[in-house]
Image (tube, rainbow, N blue to C red):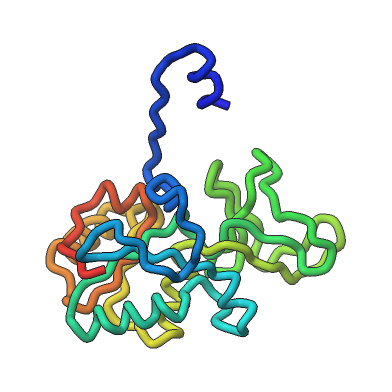
Length: 212
């Protein structure tokens, strides 16, 4: 809509994004898994995770190709940065029985599951009780969709990258002591470090030279 208004009014149109999608750089790229020469030294590759799921692959957002790249970086002793859209375990959850979304009663934003067992609102701070039930049918099991920093870190551990995982998000920066330890870890990271960070946190903290 903004682009159409700019054209109609004959004014410049500028797109700004903290994390633009691949389509902004390569609008004609349609083949997932094919290297695109965005940088001669580091070709850009788009992976369609839906294809991994159809082939019975990993049930999480770490594609086989990414796992291989992480192993290569570890062998070469090069730190890695994985950018994630939000903190927590999932972007949103649905009741496994009636498919009702889990929403905040205060602001209607999607609630995010926390590793402790409750759901929380990342917008206003609301928290449910431990192990809540669906407001519509009373079911206590939920399906998570999308992935936050906690889920990525957990899945990295399950994939064999348990050591030297650094999570950088608002939760990790909540207390001054933790922020100071984070900054120290990022300034002198392990050569095998895997940094899992939200966009906003990655921009606000010093990052070491990265291999991936």
